[in-house]
Length: 246
Image (tube, rainbow, N blue to C red; front, side, top):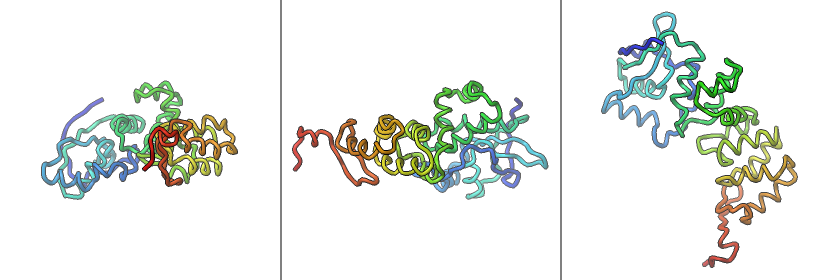
């Protein structure tokens, strides 16, 4: 795959619709566009963005969307670019995903949509696993997030409610529609592996959720703290009388 480095004018660049990072708000607490723009203003662009040529002499940004937007904000022009020739749509998604896959501040739904695009292209979990270096189990977990109701998807961020993608995946596999939304609200205040344990023990019976939530709040699952909907702190040692409350 031909690669070359060149300086390109801002006017020749545009963000790819295939870019896997759609939620630019994710992770802004430590790497927001304003902060990045300030850094570029002071130090210049330290890492080139990656683009591919398109018809009409323009270039599509496939890696480095934030850096490009930050350069636009401060008028940093031209931009240092790695130009990748002969990159098709599937390659562009793969490149973008692999670039971002280990970033904790990438929205899980962005990862899920990118993985779905790859699976739609190859129709093979082993092939997607090969392209991304992720396990098939992890890929299936992320794809299951797309089965969650829209009202839950809107709440998913880099610090998602039920502790991690594993719990969200189990929620999608266990409940659907209004039931899934109701269960999400009841377990989203718990941390660590508690939400997944509640879902596992429910066996898909929504009627068991309230009792399991109560058990978790009382420390039955080694829970140390809960918050969110329940507005509470529960320390298991206190409940067991090992530490005196003052």
